[in-house]
Image (cartoon, rainbow, N blue to C red; front, side, top):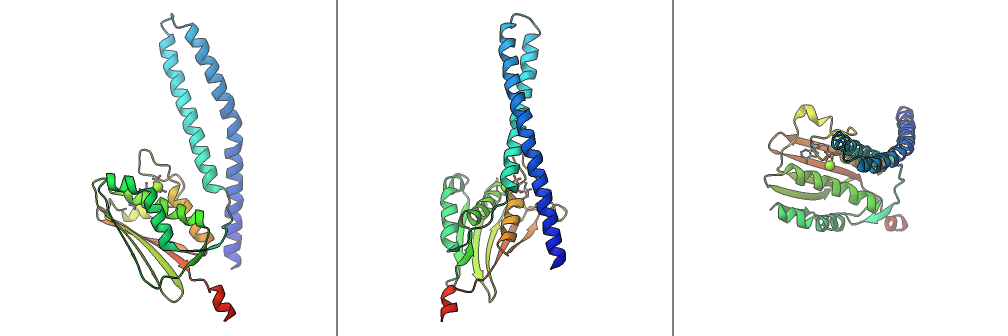
Length: 240
Ligand code: ADP
Ligand code: MG
């Protein structure tokens, strides 16, 4: 609709502006890094003075913060960079298994039980291989991180007349009702080492594929995340 188009144009211009700002931060950050290194070298020569140790400590804090800013910008640019999906026929089960293999060691280290259940008649979808893998990766990672005390992850795939669904069900910490609306916001995280961009990326990729994502969660019980993909008309059927 017209409204949706205006909304998506507004969003993309905000994204461009933000990407520009993040890019502009790069040069001063570089200069700061270089000058902090110079100060560090000069400080070493002054090391006999008693204030030097304190100064060196502050310097380290500054260097750490510069690194943190750099990380924030890098992740941000990755998250907003417009990527047009390159559409291919994808076997969802094969992709889920590929992503699970990447995370196998961590899954077994944490004694997490993993089950994949796929209905026999699951059709392929049209999607960008790399982007859909990123969606699965982010969701499995979050599920893992939500199950610090062990638990199980089930991946279910099924279809109906118009859609293909892939569901990730974990028995982890869950999300309270009031926090549910926040999970797609950039930088929303409840983790010490979190970036708060994973779910935002997932949501964007699903939207670009004409799909959507739905979350059901209960605090301390677990979370079920459902991806809905449109069913594609198979090319062969068009020829029939
Ligand atoms: P990050 O993982 O870096 O925190 P995300 O965007 O991936 O950022 O997730 C945002 C927040 O949503 C998480 O910090 C967590 O609070 C919540 N969340 C996402 N997935 C789950 C899940 N499966 N179980 C519990 N909480 C979740
Ligand atoms: Mg995450």
